[in-house]
Amino acid sequence: MLAAVLGAAAWLVPHLRHRWIEALITYDAVPSEPVVLPPATGAGVPPAEHVRVILIDGLAPELARGMASWQALCDRGTRLIVDVGFPTVSLPVEAELWSGLTQQQTGIVFRSDQPLVPPLVGIPSQIAGSRAVAEDHGWIVRSLGFAEVEPAADPANSAKDANPVGWRAQWLAHARAAVTSDARLAFVHVLRVDTAGHRSGRDSPGYAVAAGSADAILGELVAAAPDARWFALTDHSHRPAGGHGGEERELREVEGCIAGPGVPRVHGGPVHVVDVARALAESTGATLDRQARGRPLGAALAAPLGRDQAIPVLPLGRGALAVAILALGFALAYTRHWWLAPWWFVLGVLSFIAIHGEPTLSMPIVWAPAGRAMYATWLPALALAAVTTWFGVARVPLWRVAVAQLGLPIAAVAAAMTASGAWPLVVGAHVAPVVPHFTAWLSPLALIAAHGAAAVALAVLGRSVRSAFGRPSPPETPRSAPAAS
Image (cartoon, rainbow, N blue to C red; front, side, top):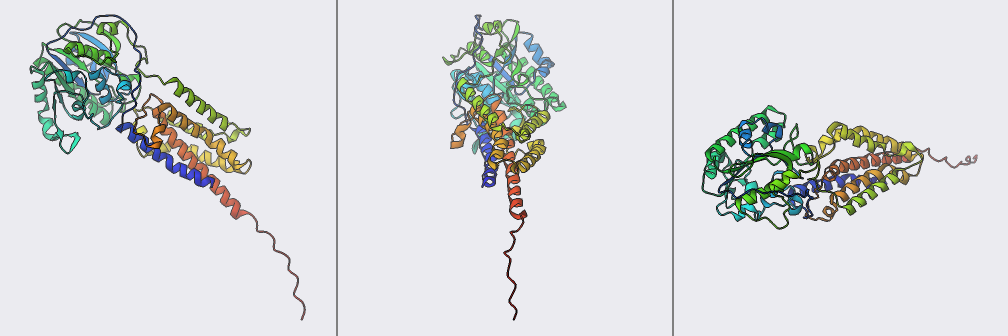
């Protein structure tokens, strides 16, 4: 019976993990309080007749510093280090930029290929004739509330662009037309750098080539509208091997600048992306939501963010409960037989960290539905779990072996679910449990615990079968000799 229960758990937990992944990329989170920014006083920026924003998606700061057109523009105005907050995903960050509300306030925390319907109510929706042009993945800019958006959506699927092949040949001409138009606000979204980052990583030659061509596009557009106020921005960086989404500083802190009439030549930061949103609102005459926490640009520069001040903190009650659950797991793992402790679990976790690093939402393996890339990491640990269980059952009660081997792994998964707010998913809630650190830990911990349960079940089953078939047969009852005839 125990083997059957553990086997069922080993089958069920990976399926719950699949639901967890689906929820992360599909649903929104419950809106919550934003991070607290350092208070300060300082001047904002004056209104501008024409505001032009170019966002080069996925641009690493070290490459931005080597881009000639980017540097020439930033030398004319205010150069910034911008912390985009958490998660480091394009739509949530760009929703921050155009609403002035953090990801935690909006609840928009991922949404892979899931446009906002209806679009965002923010700065663009207040500016008559505002225009946005995207190189690719137009569903992102179609989510932001601009009056005119290109490319149009595919009528059959709003997450896809209509005629993507034809659009690639003409999108730059449309971008040039937007920035040279009479529209007060125009936005150009360049995607090629992010595409190269996902394909081959931040350190690849292809990524550098894409950054160079994006810089050429920037130079051409700025030259076409030299008297406008320009915002040159990005939404996140990339890991060396590609990927983003987590809370790593190397992904959150990016280069940006504001240049043009009325903008002082200074530099500083890190400022929060909602501070940049306030500068956009002041430039265009838009009004931010009363819950927006962005500071005037001068104040933001006077009080830069601390190292991880843009990362939302875990609510005290939820964190305390998670710690209590983990402490219970350690208590369950305690045994006078030191070798019966769940050393396999410790080995599995340490092996994962040694090979892949601390799990974050930037790691593709964290999101992989099958999780096969992680299996090999802890296979030796599973063998240790089976061997320990095999010998443990022969010396101590079966229930004590099961508790010692699986109490801590199960408690670790429960603690991660508690900290990340993932329990509602078990009952079918449509909510994305996205919090720094703990959400990413949940993925490998769930698989390690499930595989460990399977290893313990096999060992218990094997020991039971051996006991049933290996015991000597009972002696036969002596028979009396047959009587003589």
